[in-house]
Image 1: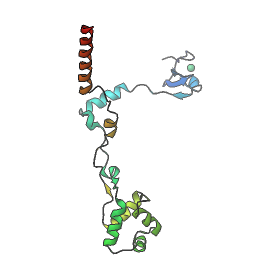
Image 2 (image 1 turned 90 degrees about the vertical axis):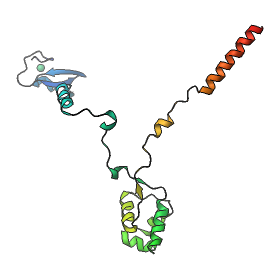
Image 3 (image 1 turned 180 degrees about the horizontal axis):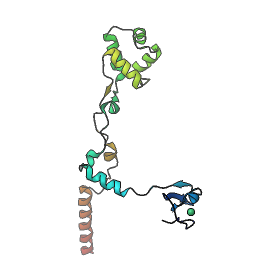
Image 4 (image 1 turned 45 degrees about the horizontal axis):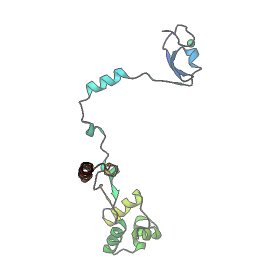
Length: 174
Ligand SMILES: [Zn+2]
């Protein structure tokens, strides 16, 4: 193995260095000129891994996020908090003391002016024995429907056909 920069024999491990933007295999001395190091393509490793792992369908390859990560705050969290608090006959102050939260914050949450963060939502859930976070009702595929191209519809095709007929007729007549 020779150094691609100085041409000298490389003793020991050749170094993969990026010199002036080019990937080079160089000796230790020339490696000092490099701006960084590059990794060879891990072909061998990839092969081994592919052989060891069973073939998984593409749709299942993505790691499924845990339930807590995908939970979404309900839209009517304010209403739920208020109803539960009243059900337990607690005032804002009582609830505030219970979960060590400012009364003003609780008021804002109940009126929907403030969205509780994860920690506060959990505290409210525990204190009021309610659920403020639910698993998403729909998988997040909205971008698919939104970006659906509006191509030529069947109606358009019929219209085009009719127009064609009309033109032919007119040509015959004239
Ligand atoms: Zn060299």
